[in-house]
Image: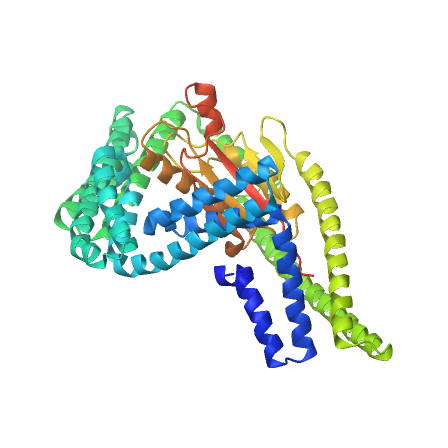
Length: 518
């Protein structure tokens, strides 16, 4: 929904236009419904602030904080003022004022951001590739080029488009230099360290094939980067492949060293144990008396069956939801038609009928809100029982549910989801599915260790990793789950202590139930 559509002034103008044009009663009824919903929103400060909170998060995900930094900062400041007014129980007029100020700043920022995206398209691409390569770890150099980039977007905000056009090429080149350096010194440096680790474990002798592949890949990558500094996609892909092969070499070397001390039967039993563990977890038949290929086929067949069943259930649920919406719309149309007929038979005027319908909608709105609150509270209690105290904190934030994942752990400086997190994420999926098609926002947060740029990027990458996990496991469709990184901007505790920093390093899941139209 655009900001224009959310603007109550705009809605009022549309209504006024319908009235002047003498629309048919069905159109007027629909417009009256929009007015009632808009009025209900304006009379409910909690909904006003919650909706603005979602819009601020969406604006950050759309990069308005860098495409129109001054305007976004003003919008966020007004939003924080609205939050404070709400927490203090101030007059609704004060809350409305702060909300409207924030929305006006957001609208202006969106207009500027559109110009920035067009003017600085190549610059934005160079920036993203540098960040993806890890350039933010070169704190001083990265901060300087980042400030120069923000100078470009601020110039656009101040209607100085020529400055941005004249200086963007230099900023692009500096991002590219940092990207190449990051790939060589960070990714390739890590690869060389992994190969050295494998060499110390006698990889040349015990895993010569894997060792040769890893060395060949790193040498080819280094040579390619030097010869093709602007072939960004190929360079990045080769570096990632080198990292994969080096990690694989370490694993193969460690496993090879392990089995050299084992007897043949022990090796066979170990392989059998791994296959059986997987098949047992899948609920598949015990086939340890069959050939390994048969056991593997058994596992693959079980997985395919589960995937097929999941797809079927997903399609069935979608079809059921469409059917329910159709039935609901049909019943509502019948009710509206009966209301009109009753009004006609009773000799009611159109104005009386509209007033009656408006009162009915207001009553229905109150009833639905109360019913929604009761249902939300019931689901909140149910979700609380899904988690142990050391796994997650579950609490209400007005009409949203927040899952603070206390047990979610990532490798230091990484955004890879490790297997030990799967059980916790499975409970998160269950919590989300407890609600009917909610919207979900995954928030990434860090402590203050390291630079602001590194923390912001890392928090975004971790939030994106959780989002991709949910999509891959069909928890939600892609357009229903978003990810946003806040870096160290929103601490829960002091960063002066290790305990406080541990609390601040977190993933928060915001579950926003769908508001059914009246």
